[in-house]
Amino acid sequence: MKTGPGRSRRVRPAALGAGAALVLLVAVYALCLPAAWLRSELRGAEPATATFHGGTCLLGHCGVTFPLAGEEVTAALPLGTRARGHAEGDIVEVRHAPGDPRRVVLAEDTGRGTVAALLAVPGAATLFTLWAGGAYLRDRRSRGSEQAA
Image 1 (tube, helix red, strand yellow):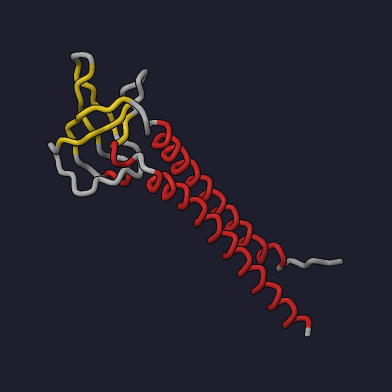
Image 2 (cartoon, rainbow, N blue to C red):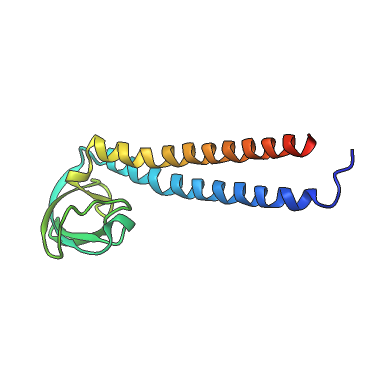
């Protein structure tokens, strides 16, 4: 069976697209799963009252400062934190890990809904990637049957 010189040109874009989709899926899983795990892990952790420091919280560029054992601890909030209208200097409730106070989340961000939303993102990305791959394969098969006829 001879494939001819054009076959590699048709396969290469599909392989690059599949590779890019896999890299994006791995990135989504690598960002969302640890963020969801941290929120569920700190659900019942030590509470504290902290001062909010603004930024783009959804991208993980905001933080809080709170007193702990006579010292000021400054910690970054995790990726996917929903600021819910908090501004620079607002007082917020946080939960921090007992042994590592730099691992902190907003107390209102530890609910099951937030964790479910963080887990739904990679699930939806996976379903979309599978749907796109299936649509590509269906289109490729229909083109192949049209060319054979």
